[in-house]
Length: 80
Image 1 (cartoon, helix red, strand yellow):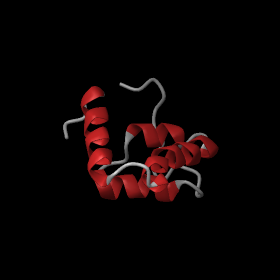
Image 2: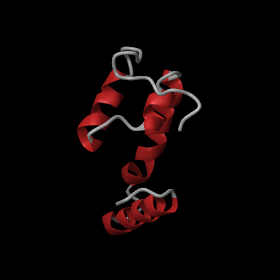
Image 3: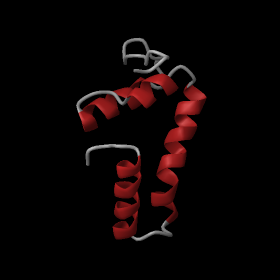
């Protein structure tokens, strides 16, 4: 259980609400990390940019990016 309660999309600042809604559409619920990062919109935006950077760089093939994502998910216990 998180020590900091994640914000819901109704509680989140308007400028980051779309990120919580996107997570809900993608996963069926807002990711806890996104709800916690919503307390500090600059951190949430930076985290999203950092996550998108490998795909935008064009340095990794789609296949390798998929394998990296799968490995990272397995390392943190995501059931992909």
